[in-house]
Amino acid sequence: MIETVRLVLRPFTADDAQDFARMFADQGARKYTRYADDNSPAAIQQEFEQHFLQNPDTAFAITLKATQEMIGFFEFHDGGVMTYLLMPEYWRHGYMPEAGRAMVDYAFTQLDYQQIQGDYASVNGASGRVLAKMGLIDQGAQHEFTLDDGTRITVMSYKLTRAEWLARQK
Image 1 (cartoon, rainbow, N blue to C red):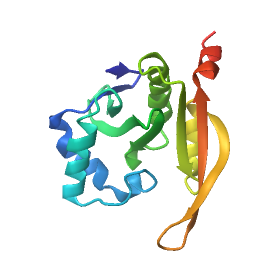
Image 2: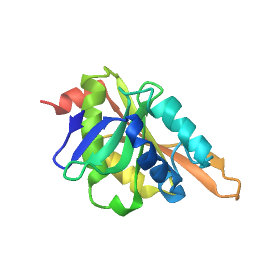
Image 3: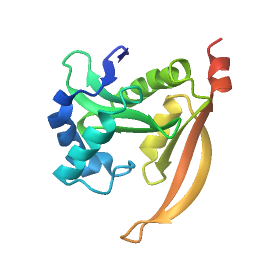
Image 4: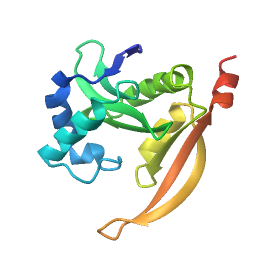
């Protein structure tokens, strides 16, 4: 469990299934995550049981400290790539940068990652601002792809190495 001023980040439990399903069913909230494709109840349940419950060291529920309400999640996958989601009603309150800064520290002190990375779709500039507030460094455009509706998306990236993180700790 990781605590910040206003949040508790903790591994998921089986009791989180209903809140997780509600959170994942919000297509707007997960539109630009790696989980954007299938939001059927069966797919959401499968993702929860086979991924989020099975990775307690890298997948965390974000909860409000005052109420224990689940408002999002934060995870590391592929050895240091982060994915996060926050319910829209909690956007623009500084929760995700707060959670992210704690998770950056956790990634380097507990997971022993040498580098962490956050990618975002250029049309979702708010996510890029969040990554900057977490302390990651802008790496610019990485690649492009086209959505089914014809929209061109540029994948942008932020990174932070262990050496860069350590230099900031002094």
